[in-house]
Image 1 (cartoon, rainbow, N blue to C red):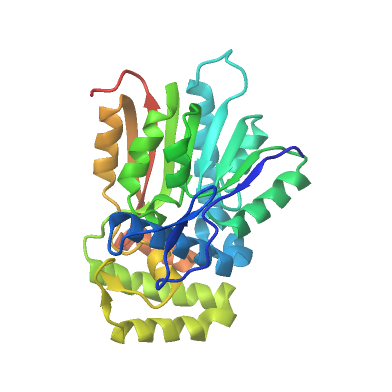
Image 2: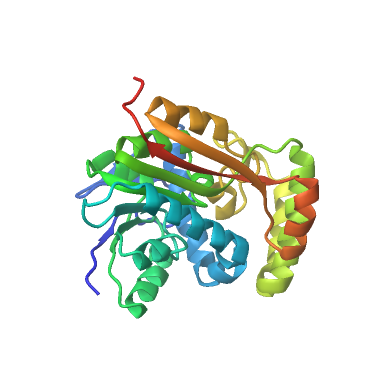
Length: 314
């Protein structure tokens, strides 16, 4: 397998000592700055996925549920049908590609894929999968924010699968992504939460669902997970992040509880010249929760499939 790998922003999670890494030096960040907050979220994601990478594929419904897998396949079939023909291999960027939920499906179509992920642990799993399938991809171990700040490369398809809610500023990432998409190309995002109609009810639902999922798939973390929840009840609020922070997951899943404004993302894409198809749907980690939530609709995700059809409105 021919592949490229780059390592950037490789830190250990530490809220007391925050630095960003450049090619040749470490640069201290001004306390309480927006950049500090953003980089704390990046560091937290690195630590979070170091902890869960090996169990991710069995634990996350977006990877293991057959219905969700069919959705991705159907969406990519639609993209393949609508992309212009005769331009060579489709060039894709899978942002936060993780263990390959979207990447592997793209590669099976003969598309050329670049994967950007802040987690070296998740990328290592994906690299093994690609190698075992005798495939080839480009792997970049850096944050999505870092990649967009330095790259001018255009893509036919840019995807985010269960990624936007891990970013400090998802709307900014979407705007940057839209600038890199070629005419008639596609933006694709799936498996991110919307703001719940009742935060309390949604949090209760997801807490119960998560505990059941841990009993089924991650029993070693069941009691530690309960302990983290109890610690959080008495932990002081971190003013920079507007939440209690007792573990990396509290920052890594930055918008998991309060959701992302999917209508604002649609508006940004329309302004950038895209025709947008946006849908909301009920989710859950366990089959029981997914079945109940189809009726309760306490916790919803959204997906967006958007094609650049005209020039930006700017």
